[in-house]
Length: 405
Image (cartoon, rainbow, N blue to C red):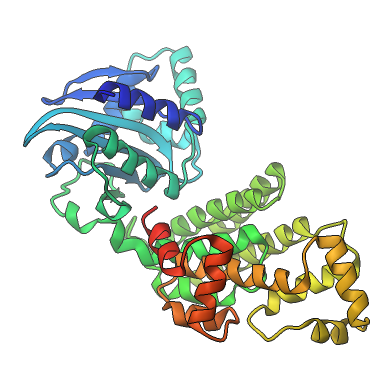
């Protein structure tokens, strides 16, 4: 399979999920080909932000992820022949978070054709509205896959280059190497932990919130600290809205709630008020997802058992303690639980512990010994054995695989 066939396969694979516009540039920077209906407009935006210039100045062939504060992003990769640049391939733009397309249109008005008719302006607005939103997990994977298509070499997420800018003027990106994805790994892990707990409707999220607060550094989008915090909060609210939908909340309710909390964030008069909006938003979404995930086919007794196990999986739990807590005979509770859930109480406890362990392995830097104890296993050896039986790999391998995504 030659390069063009690999690229065609890459484009088809990405399109199975979210189709991205494709741009091909010559070694000298000329636009050679694109499937975008308004290729000159989006090419002008790409150049206006300084991304085109920085792409050609960057050393090496590692793909670059360009992300602007307003949420517009591109993925770019290079075709090389030894040390010589042959062609450049760019995919995008797409949104890294929710963004008002009409706001985008007004921001970039100075780079759009001045002679546009009313019909073409409406076409541009529709194109902006139709751009896909791609999660960070996916667009990082796309970058890794694009590099393989261009070079047939394997790299990890940490080898990608990430450029995040806040100025609409052409910027100097001589400090590109300092913006590596791996430098933001602690923040990525903390955010992923919070979003995973939200999708599960897990009310035991206080520790994850504390971990996130410890690593969050508000980006300097502007010279106004409160405005920077609002931008960051809006991005997080948008992520939570999508995670809640993935957890079972209806699309209309998920987006409606997200919009309401974004308005509240914009109206906040202080950092403290903004933090309270974010805390209330997250708790509200988790509670709503939790309600959606209650299994209506379960009896109140069995549902109470499941709830207790999910909240106390790290503690010593036996069928005896559950029976005493709920006021039922042990045999009766065990029989009903197995009949309604299809698994024994002990199997359900093991499942809950392993699921939490998977989350901690992929989103924290805790040692495997610490994780084993936190999820209720008495020893690392026992934890390793049970984890391998349930997941198919060791905890160490699972962590390595999740970090390399």
